[in-house]
Amino acid sequence: MAKTIMTADDSASIRQLVRMALTEAGYQVVEAVDGLDAFNKFAAAPANMLITDLNMPNLNGIELIQKVRGLPSGKFIPIVLLTTESDGTKKEAGKLAGASGWIVKPFNKDQLLAVVKKLLG
Image (tube, rainbow, N blue to C red; front, side, top):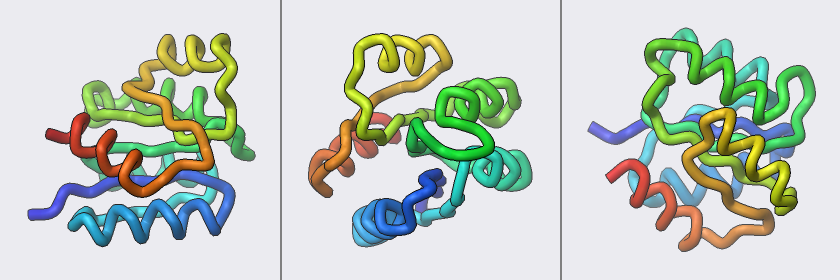
């Protein structure tokens, strides 16, 4: 059975790029339009992995990670921040919140899939 990856990004074009790359590689994809949408969808139907933007309305990526990590189903899943931010303090905040990895936009498909395969096994 294909593993499910949730993507959370307020940019429809980024969600589309991520979805295309992941579905071509055989993953199921659940999309969320912001952090709150992602949290609600994850709480209802947990995914095997979460890829989230940092800067989003309602819940930002850091807040989303903290809330997902607070759920029994979200304690140990891989969570990757996919963001335009490359600032060291933001990366540290992501790591402290429980992020497993960080990819800077713009990204390429091979880079994204390499991270996903590494983290999902």
